[in-house]
Image (cartoon, rainbow, N blue to C red; front, top):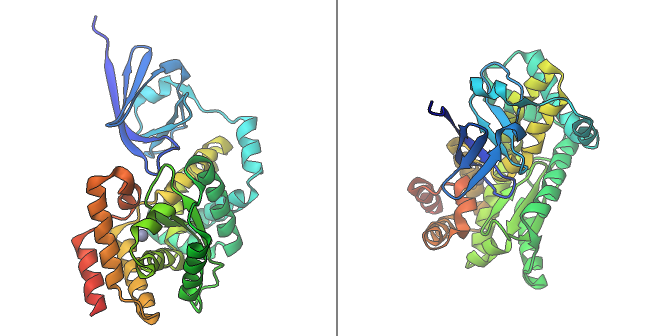
Length: 340
Ligand SMILES: [Zn+2]
């Protein structure tokens, strides 16, 4: 009798990569193989653990190597070891009170609103109701995680850093939102050229991005775009949209472990956030206005984006920023016309 092979298509969250990798999980007898374009791993099926089923939501398979595989539900998943509430997970969550508070706020708002089918609208509403302190706590946790996984201390010279900080402070001074902006410099060991906003107003920029910029104006153009995400606030909205299904799962099954799945994935979601085209366009428009207010031509945005796109052809380094900020000819064109 030939052995039945089942293949599941999904996404692999390895924890070391800024964005999830499209991958296939192949089941053959007692073995499972995880395959993507850049890696292949083998596991014993009995070591895999599946998250609970909730409606038609995607499920997560915890891998023995520490990563997670996200895929659509499949009857095969019921034959795997099932995730159970564990002390470890509960303790983990208790230590992260701010995350728990945010999760509760999200949960209550969603259930009370009964808006289960209008995620973007709910996310916008909930993001607006979360106090800035909780948002900042989320951002802080994410940065600690990122420092462990991706970053090394910056090697940018002090006077260059000081100059960038001063320009950045001038750039966000006087914005209407009450945000405590903070600029963090890091060497992007694993992620290369990058800049992104964390919840609460922390913006991280890598040495590699600073080196890519040929002028401080270009760097300010990138930072202005990230400020746009904070002001909207897209980052938190994105995070909520992505964790909302697992949060609802937790509410229904009263299973804290499933909540940790969502929260543990949070840093990946925050930093690898693939914003929608709409969010990107909104942040771009915001940035162009902000730049013009400070006597910087939006053309600086066009030139650094073009260089980034060119660099991506030559080095894989730029991929991380590009995957979250797809460069379209349209964006560059809008920057140029805003400059006129
Ligand atoms: Zn963006």
